[in-house]
Amino acid sequence: QLRVKYPGVNVILLTATATPRVQKDILQQMRIDINKCKLFIQSFNRSNLIYECTLKGTTDTALKKVANLITSHYSDKCGIVYCFSRAECDKTAKYLSAYKIKAASYHAGLSDSKRQHVQSQWANDNCQVICATIAFGMGIDKPNVRFVVHLSMPKSIEGYYQESGRAGRDGEISYCYLFFCYQDLVKMKRLIQNDDSQTSTKEAKKVRI
Image (cartoon, rainbow, N blue to C red; front, side, top):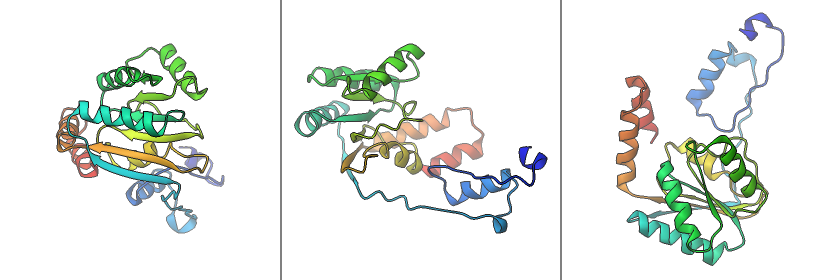
C-alpha cells in the first residue's frame, strides 16, 4: 500500500538470507520491477566459521559430548546450544550445569521477565551457555560467541545459516557443531505434518529440510 501511495519514493529492502524464490516474491509483493532495481547479493560464506557435523547417537551421548567439548575447549568462552524443544532446553541446561558450566534455558515457555533476565546474564558474560529453541536469536548481535551447537537437525538450511551465523561476529575463528540422527528427520516431518499450515506450505517445508 505504501508503494502505491508513494510511487516516487526510493525503497531499500534488506534481509540476511533469502532464496531466489523468496527474492522474487519480495519484489512482487512490493510491486518492484526487477528491471528497474539493483540487487546486491553477498556470499553466504564466512571464512572464520568452521563447521563440524557428527552423528549423535542417543541424546545422553550427545549431551556428554557437548559437555566435554565445552569444558575441554571453551571453558572461558561463550556459546549457544540450540535444542529441538523446550523440554530439551531445560534438560540440556541442567545437564551442563552438573559439569560446572554456567548454563541457562531460554524458550517461549518462560515468562518475558525470565527470558530478559537470562538474555541479559548471557549478554553480559555472567552466563556462559544459553540453551535455546529458535525463539532465541532475533536481534542478537553478541560479537564474542565462540561456538554454536545444534543438538538436533535445524528446520531448514536458511535457518541453520542464521542460527550458526551468530558465532564469530567479531571476525575471530569460531566453531559450529551439528549433532544429528535419522530420528531428527522423523520428528521434524511429524512436527510439520501436525501444524495448521496448508498442504502446499507443509510440502514446501518438507522439501526445505
